[in-house]
Amino acid sequence: MKQNIALENKLDYLSQIIIEQQGIIDFPWCSDELFYPYYLYFNDNHNRYSAGSLIAFWGLLIEWEDGSGFPFRLGEEIYNCYDFDKYMESFIFNADTIQIRFPNVFSVIVLSLAPLFINNDLIKLFNNIEEVKLRMYTNFVKSSKAIHDKDIYKQAFKEAGIQLDYS
Image (cartoon, rainbow, N blue to C red; front, side, top):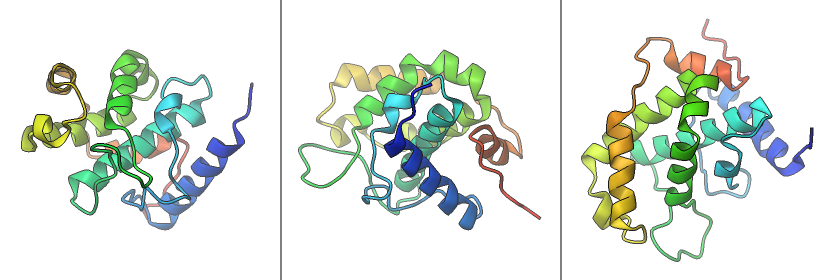
């Protein structure tokens, strides 16, 4: 099994701050400590790499969803930011496998995507992404089935190997 030291370091840091913040995942995602192309590992055979990278995607969505920041590239920004198109492509391409391996992580991502797709004019927002792709992403989100359970967030972290103490 090939080890990815850079990703390991990012995921170690991510796990540490999630535990310290007791499950909060709205972080400065574009900082050097967290910035990484996580989408490349959504379907990695190493569970920690794939689940941790999916948790990072969820964190990016939370940052957008709660309005504390916008971590995605809208054009040719000169600072660290993420390519929403690549994240969505990878998530959709690997959706069946993700949903089987990490049903709660899949669900929290879909549950975060849904209001973003409903409440935003993505065609105007992401003018750097082809309209046909954005419509495909919208259709995927609308047709995806998510688990609705009171422990879904705790279970999503557990699937990613992050044990939170909620006592």
